[in-house]
Image 1: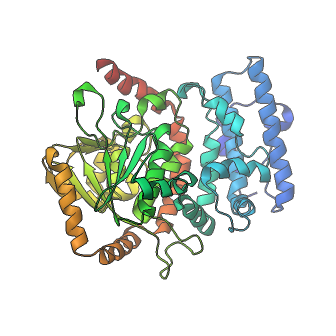
Image 2: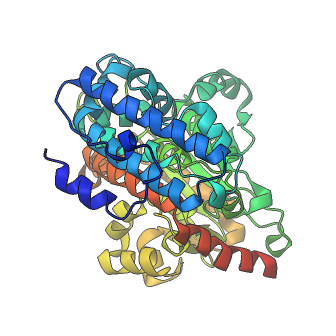
Length: 462
């Protein structure tokens, strides 16, 4: 049994002796026969869940024991998925003929393998709890997506599915072409003479990103990419309501830490964001009928500018790393505090080193280095520095400069640059690791402790 040593080592420090003899003695043997193994593993997971629920109802199981029994199941799911993830994905997608987003994928998986992942009701119940009160059932989703993405063909197919326009965007494109504006309640897309503007709009939280902005921002980006009028898009943050930043635009404050602590941000939020909105700024929309990076059938893509005002923290900084041109307020700054919080800063680990080098990237990610836009490292990320009050004027001028030189060459140069810097296969491999590791980070004690130690203390001061 190729997994025997791994299995014994992983369960060595787990306590699940309260389970029935049948379950605690379970051995995850892979026969190579999917139907046979599906029955064996599914029955095990179902029975474990039934016993766990019974123990919880009787209040005879503590939080540590719940964690251990869930991790016991996760270990067996890794073993199962390492063999069968490709087969499961192909069954769900009709042998890659059907495009399905990862949110739906995680719920359809149980139709192929019962009890493989949490049900919609399980997730609904979990998301009513504060983060520290949750069981961490969504870790199983991270394991599942990691297993899918480690398969090259299936993983790239999922990347393609996540690059297709959202239904809510396609429903609004005609309205945008007619009226020149759509407000998605969290993000706004507007048409100007020479460019389309996408504005992150969460003013009560300093333009932090959360469940309210997730699909709103992606839909706004979809419309900007799909728009027939302009070939240049601009991303900015709206003015915020906080008295400290009165009448100031803020590019982005990263993940909404209040909502994160309160359990209002599900695990899939991270993956949806990076494979959806952020990736679309970099890669655009693929042709549904052809493979990604097909030389003869380019993606529908645009040139993206960013107007960096005040600061770009965390996720805000992550967006800068996929931009074609960044116009920055000379007093602005960028940070990636995710490690200090206890999580991974999206795909910044994949991208930041290309701008500032390996050592500076490690300092920013591992040690919270603040990068002033008007510094040596800041100038490696930002293309030009301006007075904040000149932002509108400079964006208009720079867009016109781009257009006057023609955009065909700019578009194809972007395609070549993206291919050389970060192929879709590199991104797929990174996201496979990210899905697994971020799931464990999201439910770690470190994240809870850091939020309570740093975020709430800072919040109380304000």
